[in-house]
Length: 142
Image (cartoon, rainbow, N blue to C red):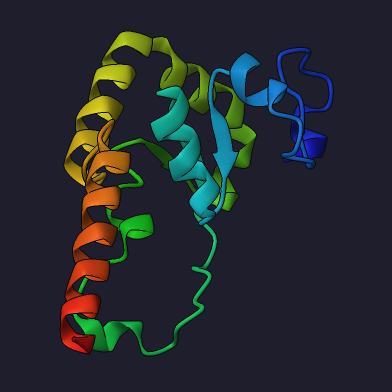
């Protein structure tokens, strides 16, 4: 990929994600199965182009849960997927993905609303939960 885009002045390979300027300045993110891609899409309301490599499986028993992991479920909803065999078309795929910024933003906002619980109110609900847990524990001890 780097070789394919090395002469494109609109492309920058960012390998150190501690520099958050790249997130603000970018139009999209190119990723694999990283959860950082979901965070990027939700935080910046920008699309992700996923390179379709084999899944990273940290829990080999995940299929026993009979649920689709979120990393798999929302890939096409917050961006697009490209095969490693199609990387010669990477520039056009990125252009296509970034053409509809308003549409992408609305789509990502909707997915975020469906996916993230208590968005914008998490501190309220988190504090309530902690207080209820402490109260319950105190009552059990008395």
